[in-house]
Amino acid sequence: MSVSAFSFLTARTHLRVLIAKGAASCNKLCYSLTVRNPFTVSIFILSYERDASLTNTSLASNDPRYVDPTIDWVQCIAPEEVNCFHGPRSFCNHFLKGIISKDSTTAFHITMKPDFADKSSNYLAKTYNLPDFPALLQNFINAIPGNHSCLHGHLLRGWTKFRLQLQSRLHPSNLIPSQQVQAFPPLTEHPYGKCDAILVHYTPPSGIPSEFWSFSSNCTHSIYSATLVAQVHAIFSFSARGSTLPANLSDPLLYVQYFAFTATPSHHPNVAMYSVQHMFTDHPDGSRSRVGAIISLLDIIHAVELIPQYGVAANRNITSETCLKLYNTFS
Image (cartoon, rainbow, N blue to C red; front, side, top):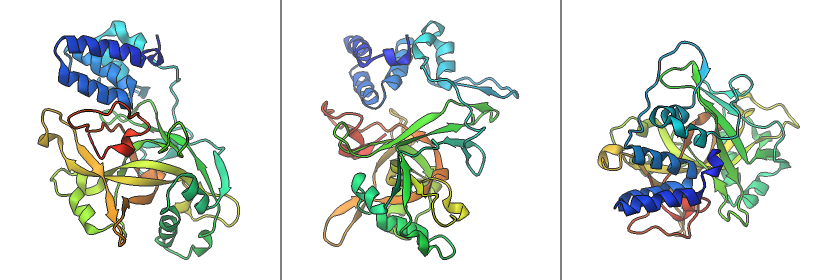
């Protein structure tokens, strides 16, 4: 049975068993995970049933190989369940032909053919419902050394997804399966878009008020000084047509909206997760909006899964396509 066959119905069956055992808090966490990723709830249920730690034991090896931390953990804890967690996708090495990060630890794969081409910045602003996109793009161009004013009206091309692949942190010669990051525009089936979250290298631009930076750095952990969680809303690049692009504008770009860190695992030891919330900016007319930015694809560190903090009760009408919009705080 493939992981796709491990459906929500199966997950709910397991949750009923947990509830029968008196695991009310476990049920709430399982629902949180199920909203974002049914695969994750499968892992959580297996960990709960076997009373097993989610910490992996990694074997040292100098020989390059492909590793899947999830499958390795299942193989150790419940080898008879391994077949339930194998997905249909084959393992690819994107380090061979992909876009490589500056530190050579991350590879990005994006298709040669874009999902749209030769569109203006106003087209993206309207299609993706990002009213600040044209101004942010203009500021991004102006911040690059040299005179690139000719790019202000340059047409754009874009994609709705890409894949990123990491090396093992413990054993860099080992490659981990790639992760897909999506950025679909608002449509009927996902009215707020379908936009995944990532962890990115972060340098506070001059346009973001200092209180946001101090809010994100008021804890002692080093993650606050140089990284932030962001939600990807658009993936694009300048069209290859026309004048030659500067080297630092040849790679794909992202429009993202930031989250601010509000707590470390030490603040909530019973959960042991970081907490984040939407980052907003206030306008003179009294309105407020999410803090957006244009960043390079190479600023990404890795993809993340955000679990909404539901409060006393979860809204069962909220789905994985709407929870990042309709809730404000996440773990």
